[in-house]
Image (cartoon, rainbow over all chains, first blue to last red; front, side, top):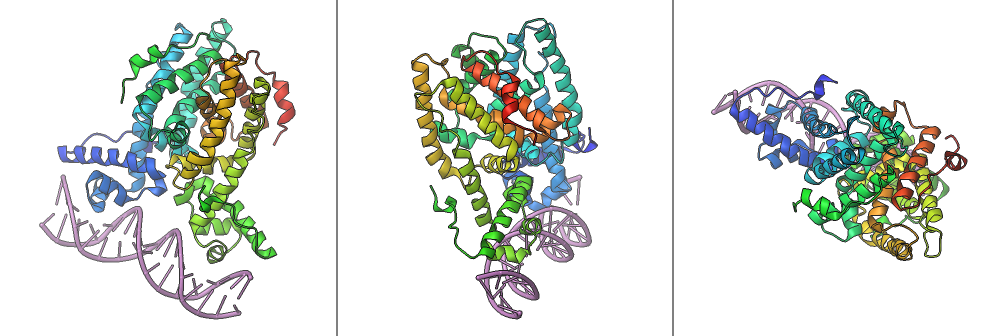
Length: 227
Length: 227
DNA sequence: GTCTATACGTTGATAGAC
DNA sequence: GTCTATCAACGTATAGAC
């Protein structure tokens, strides 16, 4: 992985740590709104309650901020595949991962949009991550799923395309939120909408893997209280 | 729908028509690469083989070009739902639509990316279209699907979420192409990749609707010759 | 009708003040 | 160590030339 995407070392005084955290939080919102080019240092500074020049003091360039935001997001993304193991129950493991991914989408939609924008425009910053770390992780998990298929525990599905589908189905509720809201006639997506979406995606993917018997909506309700 | 998104009237001399077409084609590529903010008039002009100022002559502002590009794309998007009718065979109708959407994704990935970028950033230009024309169309088709469900022809699935899923599953191969390529270890997506993806998405969605019996890959091969 | 030289505003970054 | 006044470059749009 490129050094550029490693987490910055948490050195510096108390003021620095606090200001940098504020800048990163603000930047995630601003980048989510307009992408890298659409975001200006003035926007980020205002959102963080600082002057433009002061932001330049803590992070040298706009690209530095952008990379730091992406690094935060990627760390978040990777942490949820751990239950997909050879010995696990496929239905339980997949359900857990789908729910986790959907919860992440509901709780951090801006993070999802920053990531989507980056990949949409050719992943100039995280291309190496996608071809390296992520590819290895997916290959490893795909092997697990292939094992399930060979032992007849789930239907024959291309595991890599299954991951692609899973991410598309969940992240679309953050990335295309405006369109989803328009179609559902909602001003914004609430807890009830996400519970319904989760049940829908679970049904689709589990049935797609030959794991019949839809999910009862009560299962979902427990995990996703109103936001 | 906003006047801004109607097609421009095709008046003007031969030179104008030809230059405008060249600009729009170039602009779609440039907007796909960097979004609205990421695209500059210089980029568009160079890609079209004109001077920056000359582009300003044919289209007043960058926003005018952007809206014209979006109008082209939306016209493309809407034309494929016509087989979803109350009397149709659900399996046949859905398969046809999924294949058509996937073919569109394969043939016009830049168009998909321009649309994705627009929605990702809050749909500032096509918001009214999404809440108006598109919502009405989806409501109409959703009613058809509800009818199929009531008559027991397909499993109980939320029709609006089904459309959301269908779009997510197909468009992800254009919008997140870089990521897909990284995971598949390909430099770019070719005809074989798209055939495999189509078969996968068909299986997932048809099984999700309780329409069992996966699609044979030969069915797909006929419709998607190598690009 | 077609194309170009020019002006104006914004943006990212730095040299310098506290 | 923290913050700000200033600069150089870029990008859009228009007034004007052919």
